[in-house]
Image (cartoon, rainbow, N blue to C red; front, side, top):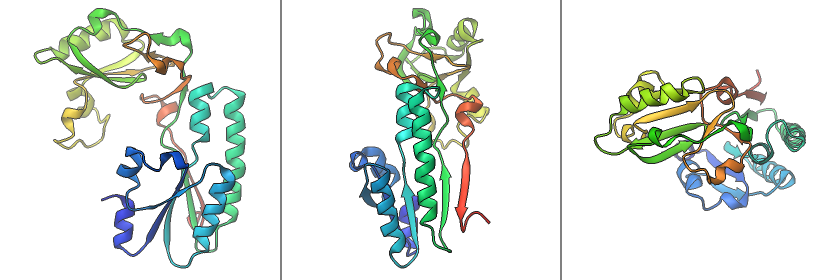
Length: 242
């Protein structure tokens, strides 16, 4: 059960306010299941939807998603004028949302990840021997998850990666990453979904098994273990600020 399904069981209605394009996505069905979907394409529509939900009587759990910073960061990078403009616009939208809060309403503001700008000269294309025995490449360019062919020695492959990329990435086998707490507590049924070997980029590097990967067009990226990607803010407003 999702948080919203559990809220419903407790008699608290849930509303998700986000762009209409996310209405039928698999992610929405997986994560926001149990919330009433309200499509809102921009700051004005989101603010109007929030005001309507807050005006209705009774307790409510509201999910309010602003994608603009993420979109600008991926497309243009965090050092761009476009990202700064999106940040200023979000600051204004947040102020307007906080102004709608009643005396018993609280607002928590957070993000799902940080971001690193990856310049084109930091793109890394692994040599063929580093992909020998790799069946599937999953994960993110900032943290590859390598799923291996049956019989491939994960420890041996990890050593080859460390010899080549150890200064540019943290290299770990699945067992090493789980033991180090990269994924927190891992249930047995989830374990096979993690790659047998992982490559988590340091600095501003990113890894592409395919030189023609369309992801090479993204400037802002995330998925690795740097503080820029892992340090996420939590701001509290209204009844939650005390």
